[in-house]
Length: 134
Length: 134
DNA sequence: TCAATTGCGTAATGCTATAACGTGTGTCAT
DNA sequence: ATGACACACGTTATAGCATTACGCAATTGA
Ligand SMILES: [Zn+2]
Ligand SMILES: [Zn+2]
Ligand SMILES: [Zn+2]
Ligand SMILES: [Zn+2]
View 1 (cartoon, rainbow over the protein chains, first blue to last red):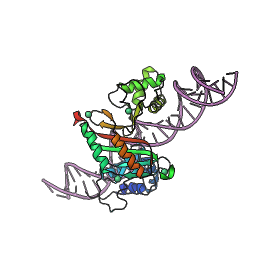
View 2: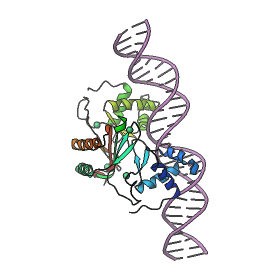
View 3: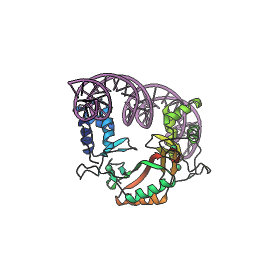
View 4: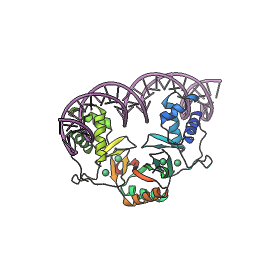
């Protein structure tokens, strides 16, 4: 799958996230984009929904906030369908690190299979402190 | 550590969660406990906070809801300090299954150590469908 | 007894997310 | 062309989740 052409609103939201140092809440994004014509939360939420579908943005459940997908920063805009995404979230500086591990995925897949459970979406978020914030 | 004596409010909230078939939101708990004198969200949130400290209740980040810890249902009320807790959450029936795996924990510990990250709290939540709801 | 801690109650507020409505625009088969 | 449809957009209102701030009462321990 190739990343589709983004609408104006989607591009604005993705840019806001991509340039942020830390995850942004929907309302923070809204504030950042008021100068660009954003007036209501729904404009942000609608864009975020699509961007998540496209795999360009992740939602951090434990923060009620959003980050741009890190996998694609160095690449072109081809969609990289990654499996389970994990996040290390520093309580000190707010920095979020996205990482992946296939061994982890396999192990988890095995565990849920044992329970006859069918996975649709996996959330793994690790709160703590990064190297610089111990 | 032994589970401390619970206050009246804490007991009421824990009971509500323990008897529920699915996770409950704070406001749902509030409604269930109005007959017992609960009038404001804060009464619920304060109880939940303590119960989480005691390890008697877990918060599901992806649902903004709470469940009683499953580990202790068959035991006395001795505090069982479990490591990483994982949840399988069925979108069909709402049922939540708590499970643990030390291999998983070790692997995860290794991964974060590689990043020089210090874990304080780990959230693992798997959304999908259970055996009965495929 | 005094101070510190802890839990409780109430009101107000703030933050997060969605529902419901209508508009405009492009696509496509007829 | 024209109608049907899909889709993005804009606006308002509302729903749902969580915390701040203040004061009181009971408990504990010096
Ligand atoms: Zn990603
Ligand atoms: Zn940090
Ligand atoms: Zn538990
Ligand atoms: Zn089910």
